Image 1 (spheres, one colour):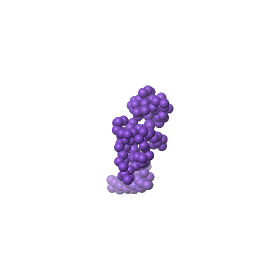
Image 2 (image 1 turned 30 degrees about the vertical axis):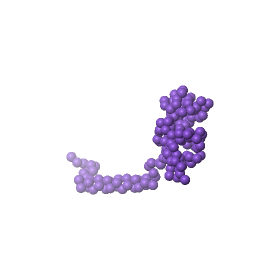
Image 3 (image 1 turned 90 degrees about the horizontal axis):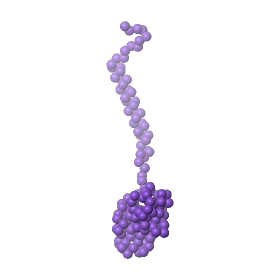
Image 4 (image 1 turned 180 degrees about the horizontal axis):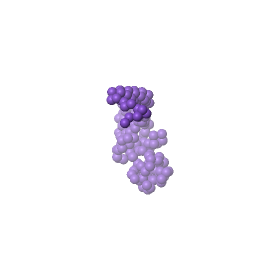
Length: 159
């Protein structure tokens, strides 16, 4: 039995009309929020893994050059030019030169002059990086591409 304090039942037509209005309102609100987020990038650009090391003439045979801003050591021999990463393979610290190679100041890993592990917690040798030459003759080092320690790049004369 229905009392006078009970609300009148809502008709199906009124319910569907209200549901449609609420759905349209939610869609419009969601669209406005999404449009407000459009100018903000969701993915930030990463730094390139490739960098220009300079002219091959800057690396005469028999020299080693440290590029501290890139954590790379350029080795130039009669066989060509190679690049070795100075990032420790244990936890990513930057190794420093030691009397018999390299040493990690953070956790004590030790590497010989070729980057092979001779002590400490490092699980693998230092990485040797891919070296190539740009069209203008500059050397390009790719920190994302690892090569074997015996791979040397032989630069061509670009004149």
